[in-house]
Image 1 (cartoon, rainbow over the protein chains, first blue to last red):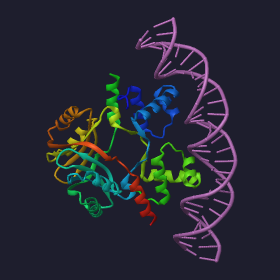
Image 2: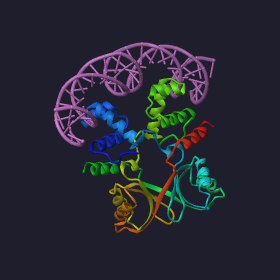
Image 3: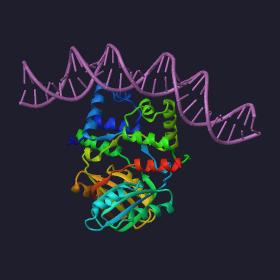
Length: 161
Length: 161
DNA sequence: GAACCACTGGGCAATCTGCCTACCGGAACG
DNA sequence: CGTTCCGGTAGGCAGATTGCCCAGTGGTTC
């Protein structure tokens, strides 16, 4: 169970890593003005805490040939949740899946090679008995790409009091 | 403009990096059974291509003290789009924002410290004249966390023909 | 006071990086 | 058919970084 909260130094470290991921421990310690061992210890702790899950490559689906993104809200037949999850897991174009409150039962993020191709993807997604209905919203612009820095900064000042 | 598509080696490299991010160029070349220079060249190309945007730390908002995630669909007053975008950018709990087709005009991902705190966040989000209406879906489970590996593998076999 | 903790500053061997050269086979081109 | 280009292989080298260790210090807790 992670001890929630990060202090100001953790925050600066994460922001630094987010801005310049290729940075090493040594260079980070120089930038932050602390000893190398401190940075090393903080990074170890942040990772075992689960605050930092990893440093996976940030892959752009568009550059992979999938420039179209959409969000689909799915309505699921009672008791079919697990089957639908398993089904959606097998579709590579499903990048993310959530179960939610509200009108729909699930929300998933899809990508496709084109608007036309999106039809194929949706057909594959909803081509499963457990899914009653789907409503899709195509993404036009992405004014705020997935970001974490502002939240980290917020958490850092909260933690630091 | 990126040359879309990746070949089988690119695919294996990205998957390897995704699975073991801390791996170095040298170790990667050993795992892939190719020369170090090749891995170096591929990584350089993938990054200048934009296929790999970077290696930022994958931060878990829950571990930061924000365990509640929600998606909000926003309806925007005509012509207020830019202002709303600017407004939402200033809210740290807004992790992501898209403009979409369909009933709503925008879709954003929010996090909060608790269900109660979510009310505060939503109030802040919709507390802006340009926003006509908001409908929020709280995430209960996340059966498929944001993933890219299946798509990379798909793109790799497509590219390899 | 004593124990504990995080941080500092230093040192060490082993490793990796960035960069370079030389060479090879296949593909494209005149 | 010969030349050039390109991506990959194999190797080498100096310099930087890593992982790990130690001893000392200041602040906190009990």
